[in-house]
Every structure is written in structure tokens, then in C-alpha cells.
Image (cartoon, rainbow, N blue to C red; front, side):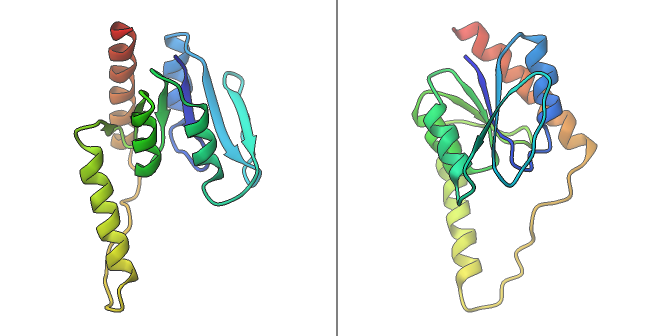
Length: 150
């Protein structure tokens, strides 16, 4: 089991590494050539720049029981389909029970944005310290759950 992070602009890389070190788990940070990431703990895998290049690399690397961190619901669905676990950088754990609803919400939001009517769909809220705390709690809980089920 390992941890795979969609690290392009990921705000929780430091928290991921801190918790992964506690459990002696390997971490791979995936980014494209437009980002420079350094780490004293994680392996860094840089892929060619391109739309969804990091997403596809992460899914291709994923194996059963791996844990992925991404904010992309499509990537989360593919990770779950491969027998992996997935968590959003907000701390929301993606499951087979919630992924379909999340994908539908994403679809409807995109449809609304693309319509000719003016829609005022707000973007994500500004990240807070509480978001970091929620992520750390959920991420550690997920790791413990996966480790006890192996």
C-alpha cells in the first residue's frame, strides 16, 4: 500500500507527508512539468504537461489498497474502481456510496455553467485552518482503517 497525491497545487502535501511518516508509508507526489515540487520524504514523479496528464498517471499507477489524494471526482471514481481508496483535500472520503452523487453534481454544475443563461455559481470557499484539521483527521482515520483491513 502506498499514497499517491495529485500534487499540482495540492494544499495538504505537508500534512500527507507528516502522517505518512508516522505510519512508515511511501508517498508519491505527481505533478506536471509546470510545477516544481521538492520533498525530503516523498518520491516525486513529474509527467508531461497536458490536460489531465497527472490524473491519468495517478490512475495508471494506482493498485488495490493504495490511497489517493485528489480533488477530482472522476479520478476518485477510477481509483475506487481499481480497489483503491480516495480522499479529497478537504477530508471528504470518497466511497462507492457517495461517488455517483458527486459525479452527478459535477455534471449538473458544468451543464449550468455552459448554458446560455447567466448563472452565478460560486467557486469553492477559501481554505481555512479547519479544512486542514478536517483533512488530517480524516486522512489518519482512513490510513488506520486500511491498515487494519489488510
